[in-house]
Length: 136
Length: 136
Image (cartoon, rainbow over all chains, first blue to last red; front, side):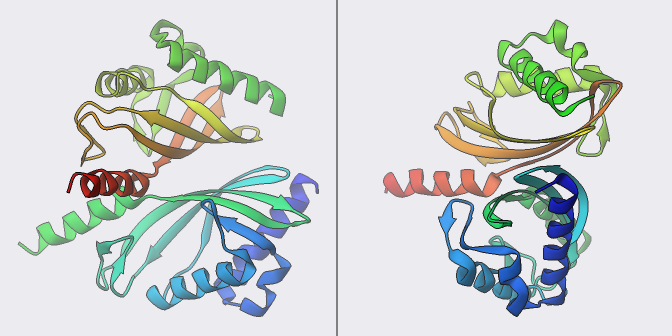
């Protein structure tokens, strides 16, 4: 897979998520996919994403930066969204938060196989602290 | 800069950090460097790293994964270390913790210019919770 092909495939994956087009997810995600070291397979991957959208109805994935180095692509994703209740254990409760996620994806058979993701939890904590300051 | 040159330069930078060879840092870090959106310059960058080693005497940077796509390189770093006191606001207090950092580096003039880093704080929280459980 060339670098351009990898980028195009990855952008197709992100579009698929933003459309919540779950029947198409298998075009992008390997049946033996893992996420942060947990083997969850395609069905577990889909369940994880469906839960994300349940918890965060206005969830939208924006690509801020890419580093494509086949068979690996690293992506910095940006989010501006409104989790209903707790998120990463934090009491967001319908507040609007902005944060980034830095993720490495390793591909196999032309599909996302291993995902190593870190979400900027500290940034959300800082915003919640600011919200509560405002309320005082 | 080719992909191989970028990787070699980045590995030189990580070696420089692990040697705490601060006089050589300017070979790798741009004088106008920024870290997570803050313009800190080379001197601020060095001060940040020196403080990291003060806070974590056994700090050691290990490259777990790279995605080189000039002028950007993304790195997943792995740490196993013993922060003396608090770390990211967490009461580690001399406990041994393991965590990852996913970082994007944009290069300019052959040097690290913009750094966008996320440390896996949730992983450390999970380990501290385990330590306190063990103590109960």
